[in-house]
Length: 460
Image 1 (tube, rainbow, N blue to C red):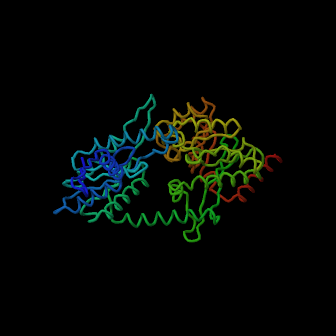
Image 2: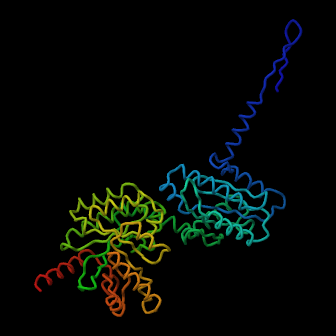
Image 3: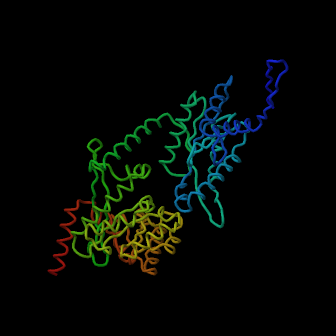
């Protein structure tokens, strides 16, 4: 209660009473909002900084760990189930993180999107931070069930330790972010401690991303084509388009070195569309029946306009749909999204063939064959490389038999020796690809090979 006394000219006074309870409540609410995330009610970035500065500023500041967190495959949940489900999931993750930390002084904050951060106080050694990181990976990785739906996300963490990895908040946060970035580049669902060399790697990656962004408009990308052999007839039946980046400063950059960066930045959608158009226009000049295989990323299919891009590339080039083969990996199918299934079914309905690439390297490929429309499976090169091992040979024979049962073409990737090709022929494998069949080559060279093969067939 606020009381104001005001004297009157003729003597006496007036007292004004004002109830400021509501005003105080509003002010407190505003202060809370300024320091907390509205969705999860966790401290936000500014509150986290305040708490970190406070911990570092206390006399005889004790060792602590800063953990920078990022959810893996959260975007897939948003795309598949919608934003309300994504928001619900973030609230669940926030609760799980709060349960994961032990100390009452530990701070869990949300920085926005699917980014979180933790201050772990009073640690005795790096082992304490590692223990927490392992606990978080395990707890966050458990399934989330809502209205009969099951959602899965993982989490990657970067860890910086005070005082070893920095003495101020900015340095510690930057170093934790670098460790997180390194972890994500090596795989998902991992934790990494900061190491001094990481800043150089980070600068290198940023420079690569900047060059990559400029490269598309400068027309620095090109396609090579690797022939695919029909093992039964001994003839080349098409080729796979492989992207190459010829950079003026970096020289020839292989896909292993830039595709991951293109996926991180989202540039893979434009790059993939370019590759699709270019590959279709090249294949349109090949002899009839020759097929073109083009790799497609999960980001392209989920971008919304993918089916239109394919139809447009076919129409523009004049290539019949039946001669285009889209190679997708398990990551496209992992979300089991209706949108992905609808897109693939729509394209297959037009006559486009769908191939499942790197078959055998994932954990549930057989389930995908049941649920998704697939015309071809490509056995990963790692299996072909070890064909001389009994267990590997047994797996390859089983996959080839499975393909025959389901009416799916089977292509063996990475065939490099006559012995491998001979074994595949005896087992009834349909197609082969690899250095024994032909190295990736320029469009003009492959075109000459295909036309001379067609002439030989006619004259024979």
